[in-house]
Amino acid sequence: MPMGGLLYLRVPDALSETALADLRARFVSELGLNIDDDLLPLELEADPGFLPDPTSHWYEADLGMPYYGRGYERGDLPLFVRCAEWLEAAVPDGEVWYGDDCTEESIRPFEPETRAELLAYYEQVGHEPYDARFRQRKEG
Image (cartoon, rainbow, N blue to C red; front, top):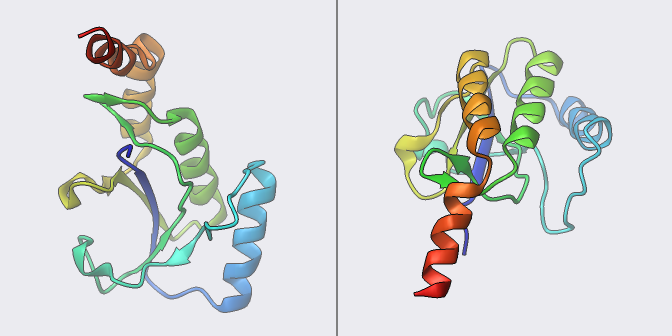
């Protein structure tokens, strides 16, 4: 099973059900997301105790996709970046955080500088490091 990518929207105050439903609908339609029936994007994190500030309100974007990062070059990083940019524009008082579903410490602010650095790496190597490891395992 692949390491999942986690994208969170952190806000100081909870979103009303109406605001959340509107945000969710716009998030899916404006980004052209093909969301699986089992996924509910922008759902309030039920157990925020593992997140850096459990007193904030955390909404998981839940794209149902593998993580992309140095050492695990698998997921659709450009999509994670587009979603982060969209969330920042749509919720000005929110912060976007990104990480994987295997280590709590990986979830960190996904700021423009961080995204630019990771995108530059992605543009340089793409998925090749992951694909090469997979080929080696298959051949070995």
